[in-house]
Image (tube, rainbow, N blue to C red; front, side, top):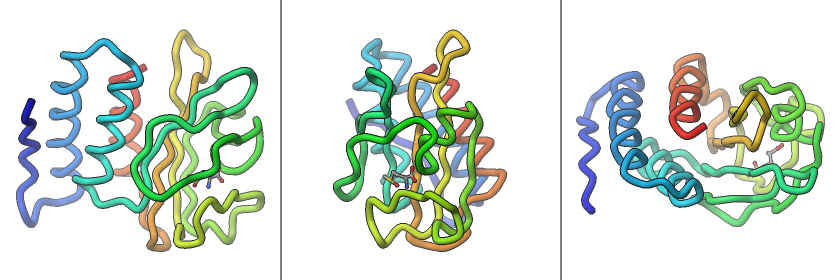
Length: 157
Ligand code: SME
């Protein structure tokens, strides 16, 4: 399977996400395994958009447990309400953190991470996990990232 994503040089962030959403849709529509799809989505986000760390945490027995990811080794378990991921799980809302040092309770899995966005994954109105994307630049995420990452998460939920 070869996937051409079609991100052209000089494209805006929005254009890159639009190309990526189409590719992700085509990759996951041919595969029914949830974990395989999460793994390919993490890879596509990491390698096409160049983020520092991209991964999923999945709710298992009352905790978030590390799932498919791309990037450096990360914390394996996060409790509800803890860190950005645990807060997103508890509230069911996306959270954009422009500066991780300014977020009370942020869990630092890697000191190179400077900003972060977390999007909840829902199934039947219940949060079943989160998508976590980290950048090594401060203030790297905005409403465009939130909108497209939420769209990507909807594709798999
Ligand atoms: N920073 C996250 C923990 C996960 S790592 O960034 C991969 C948090 O505060 O929930």
